Image 1 (cartoon, helix red, strand yellow):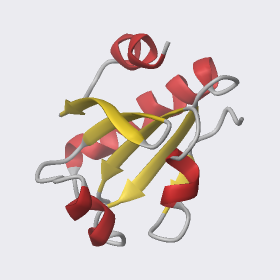
Image 2 (cartoon, rainbow, N blue to C red):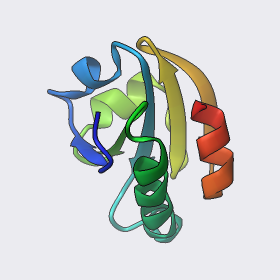
Image 3 (cartoon, one colour):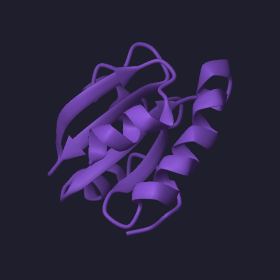
Length: 103
């Protein structure tokens, strides 16, 4: 586990989410709210990264993954449990909300 946010893409996404609890932020560089979410995500990784993997996936670079999970608005954050979506959040989320979602 890591206390940093891992950059995900079409190649490493499946392996990242397949085991345990993971939090993935679906975002794009041009998205203002996504830019607001990134420092919050960094703080979440620092708080729970010893138990939960935290990653971010640029939907422009990995449109296939975004389509698979029907990502139509960003930021969208998904908590995965052993590869399956367990909770979905749309829009900027508070640190406390995300920490509680993965705890």
